[in-house]
Length: 245
Image (tube, rainbow, N blue to C red):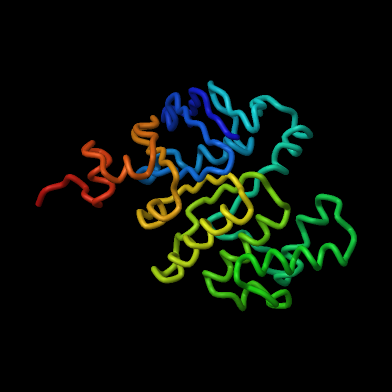
C-alpha cells in the first residue's frame, strides 16, 4: 500500500534521512520510532507529498508520488487521512462543523448524508451526540478523538498518526491506543503510527521501523523488536541514555 525506496532528505548541511526504505501492506499497522529529531515526522510529510526527497521514491498504492503535479497529488491524498499532534481543529467551528468541512471540500453537499456520516464518525470514536460542542469545551483526549473522527470521515484507505498520545495522561493514552487498533479492524485501514510511546508501539504495531542516525536501523515484527538484544534498540525500549554519573 505504501513503500519508500532509498528515501533521503537534507536540510542544509544536516542529512535527516539516509536511504530509508520500508513497505507497508494493505491493512497493516506500522509503527515508526526513534529518538527525537531522527526524522519520523519528516517521513510522514513525504508520504503525503508535503516534502519532496532529495533522492529516492515514495509509492502509494503502487504509484510514485514524487514529482506529481498538485492536482494529481490531491487525488492521492484523498486515500490518506492524517491525525496531527494538535488534532488541528478549527476553533471557531463546532465539532459537527469541523467534521463536515472535509466532506464539503470533497464535494459532498447533501445535508442528510453529511449529518449521517458525522454521527457515524463520532460513534466510532466514542463521542456520540457531541456535534454541538466547541473545541474549547473539549479535553485533550476528546480533541484527539474529534481529530480522528475528522480523519476517518473521508473514508481513507490509509491513516497516518503523528504522535497520537503526546500530551495525554496514561489512561487517556491507553484509550487512544485501543481506539487506533479498533479502527484498524473495523475499517480495515492501513496505518502508520509515529510515536515515542512504547505502550502505543506494543499495543498497535504489527511491525516496527526504527530510525537511527537517519537510517532504518530495524524493520520487523513487533515481537522481534521487543525481544531484540541490539544495544540501540534495547536502550531505547528500556529508556536508557547510556550516560553515567
